[in-house]
Length: 260
Image 1 (cartoon, rainbow, N blue to C red):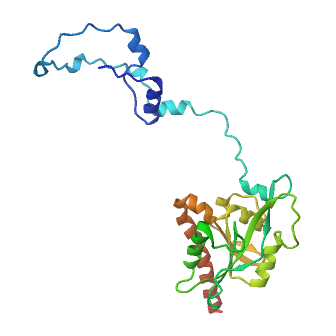
Image 2: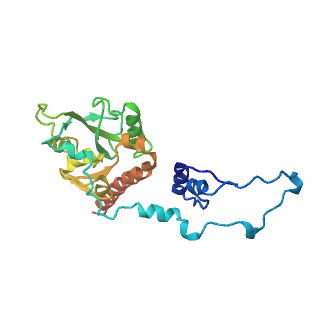
C-alpha cells in the first residue's frame, strides 16, 4: 500500500519527531503502476513474507533531529534586544513614568504588623486593587499577613506620553519621599519597569530578582508584575518565592533586633 504524503505532510511528521521511511511522492511517480492482481476472497488473501518487504536504504532516511540540526544557523546569535523597560528612561522614548500619590491599601489594618510599600504600574492609580491584576495583588499582599490585613501602601506608577510636563516630585525622587514619609519595613518593586525606574538599573528582571536591594535606605525586593502573572500563571510560584524572600529578611531583622 502506498503512503501518499505531500511535502507539507511529510514536513509536519518529521517536525513532530516521526521519521518518514516511505518513499516520497516523486519516487512513487517514477515507478510504473503494477498490474492489478486478481481479486481473492478475504480468507485466501496471501500474507507477504518479511523478505518480500523492501525497506528504503538507511542512507536516504534522515532522522528528524538531524534535520532540525541542519536548520540551526552557524552564525553568532544576535545581541539580546533590550526589554521594554528601557522606554522608561528619558530621551527617545514615547512615554515616561509618573509617580502618583501613595495610597493606603488597607486603612483598617493593624498598626503593629510589618509595613510594606508596593511600587507597581496601575491602570487606575486611585484604585490599585481594582481589576483582575488588582485582585491578584490583593491576594498576594493578604498572604503576607495572616491573620488580619497587611499594613501596606502603594506608590502607583502610570505611563504618560513623552514630553508631557511632569509636576514636581513625580519622578524617581517620589519613591525616596514616600519611603521617608511612610517608613516601610520593605519595598516591593513589582515588574521590570518599576524595578528599573526605582533602582536606576538596566538589568533584566531575572537578574534583579533573588537578591536584596536598597532604596532610600530601605530594603527592596523585586518580583513580577501582577498583570504579567495573569498572562503567565506558571510564574506565580516564583513570585511567591520572592515574597518569601522579603518575609525571611524581615524575620531575620526582627531576630537580630531581639538579640541586641
